[in-house]
Image 1 (cartoon, rainbow, N blue to C red):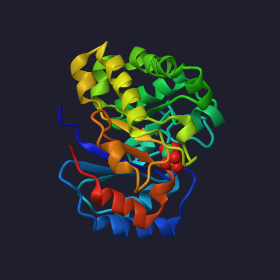
Image 2 (tube, rainbow, N blue to C red):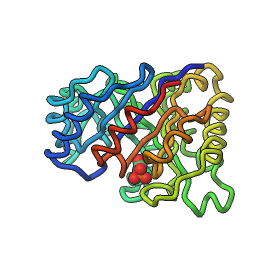
Image 3 (cartoon, rainbow, N blue to C red):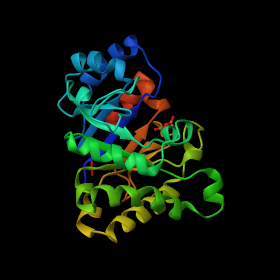
Image 4 (tube, rainbow, N blue to C red):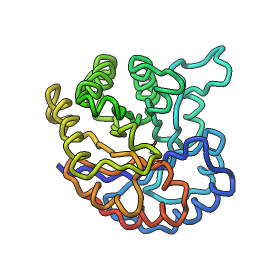
Length: 252
Ligand code: PGA
């Protein structure tokens, strides 16, 4: 199965208008391999500015979160229809920081996935285990527990329109990347788990790796058979490094 390779940037609560300008200018000049897509997810506040500046066929905009409700008295929240007023195509959901800092449960993440799909947007569903869970050999059960509520909510067929990012919590922002072999083994488990529900869908779903991906380690990680690209935090804020990663990544 030839899946496209995706390089996604999660700026988190970082960046400013200056970075929007510099990154867009640089990315507009990047020559991407034919099978590579790039997604940039700045803060909600910078989506409009980024949309106005990005002019590259295979570079898309994403948001970092959304509320599952269509509208209403939810002070401080953003709805999918608001995102639809901008050329936003992707929405990161269930990032480990949302799960741990903002207490999002897998069930509430599943509801967000459904709202995002209903709005015609593509969720980037993040899953991953903590260091403690990996040491206790609970990685596979944790990932299954994070995936199952989403399967229950939307049905496996809808995963046709979902991107999954496997991000071990212990590798996020720590400089400790999973080795390509360890990441591949976990990605293989995720694909098999999906395949136990539907093999065709499992074959098609892009599985991104995230957690301290940088210009030095991305090639070996993305070369693994079940790794279809990455979700980058720290490295995605550095104009030189991120644009270099985008231009050197080879599509499968
Ligand atoms: P990192 O973050 O690349 O800085 O580890 C990745 C993420 O949290 O998506």
